[in-house]
Image (cartoon, rainbow, N blue to C red; front, top):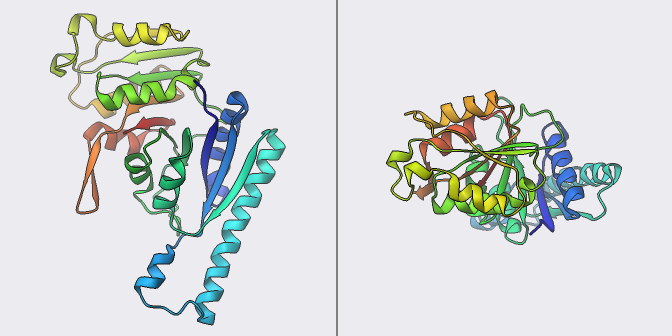
Length: 279
């Protein structure tokens, strides 16, 4: 099992440069095609719904500006991919907004690399709920890079937050190409006595054996107890010098709003290290 197509979301250079380098290094390690996608930032459906004449010179000028901006993002991506030695890469300009555009492209990729929304540096083409939307709708593993992360690689020391759920095992299976190259993979479980599908006495042993059969260096940490799992997980990851968290993404939608599980919401909002989530 390996990644053969890695999709990375392109944005302005100041916020996208780090995730491009991370995605490029993953593509090099996996001998994968790296696809960089830049959205124009506005759905064409918006114009049709508003009954705006697309031949209007003001609208045409604005659409051209958006395309030119996306084109610059693609050009910067291609320059960096070539510089880093990625053997196969392509850039795409997509007419649409980021949430839906990336989610649709993700369905023909093995891994999606995006940035976490920086509320202190808001983007005009990325909605505040971008990571949540992609995680919930892509149907593929999503690697989310926080704005504070400064390294060009991820996955040397990985921590898996495990609870034996469908989302949890999907995230683990989706991360195997990264886990196989890690120096150490640690498994941590919280409040196992509250998990109906987990044998408290054998907590983590089954998933550790599963990973060991893939040749992965695994360590099972002692079961943890904490009411505030999200914060406790981030503190533990920092103490273990973890550079990647792997976990299931939990939530559902109601009235077009995302109702995330408490741990998912905390980790998505506060983690200073990359997180690989699958829903």
